[in-house]
Image (cartoon, rainbow, N blue to C red; front, side, top):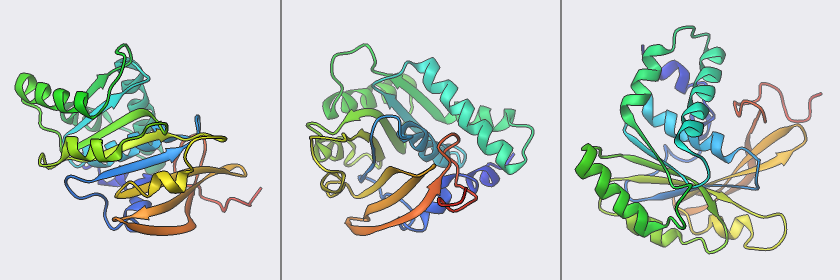
Amino acid sequence: MNGEILIQKSPMAAIASSIRGGLQPGQVGGILGRAGIGKAAMLVHVALNALLRGVPVLHVSLVDDQARVRAFYDEILGALAREAGVEQTSALMLAVERNRVIHSALDRGAFGPTELTELLDTVASVMDFHPTVVVLHGIDAAGLDVAGWREAVAGRGIRAWLAVRTHREGGPRPVDLAAGFDTAILLEPEGPRIAVRLPRVAGSDGDDAVALHLDPVTMLVSAEPAGDP
C-alpha cells in the first residue's frame, strides 16, 4: 500500500512547503516547546514522513523505553489512517518496522553527540543499518549543543531532528535556541489548539506568524481556525 495518502494527512505535509522541503544532509532541525506540548508526536510525524517513503530512520529516545516509542508510532499511524479513511494498515506498519531502528537511552547517564556517533557506528557494523534521518527526543534546552549534534551527522548524509524542551521561566528563549538550528519548528499553546511557528527556515530567520494549528490530542492539522468554538 502506498503511504503517500497518509503522508498528506500529516502536519509535516503542510509544513514542508514552508520549510522549503525540509533539511539537507548534514543539517539539524529543532522541534521546540515546553513539556507536554506535543514535541514527541511531532517528532514521530517527522519520522513517519520519511518511513512511509521507504527512508531509513533511527529514533533515539532519552526518556522512553522502546515499547513506549513503538506504541506511540502505532497510535499516530492509526490516527493518520483514520483521517485518510484507510482501514488496512498492516502493510504500512510492516514498512515502518523494516525501515526503523529504535534506541532507548533511558537507563544511561548521558547521551550527547559523542554517543550518537558511537551508536551510528554500531548500528552500521552490527545491523548493517544506515539511517538517512535521525530523530532524538528528550533533549533539554539547558546546555544544548547544536554544533556538536551537527558534527555528529556531518559527512554521513544524515538529516537530524531534535525535540528540545524549553522552559516557561529561566533558560534561553525559544527564539534564541531556534537561531542555532538550520530549521526550527516552535510549538506553543494557543487557545484550544497548538500553534506551529517557524522561527528558523533553511539557515535564515523565519516568520513569527502561525503556520498552522494542530489538534492537541491527535497533533493533526486542525480543521477549524483556533478561535472557533
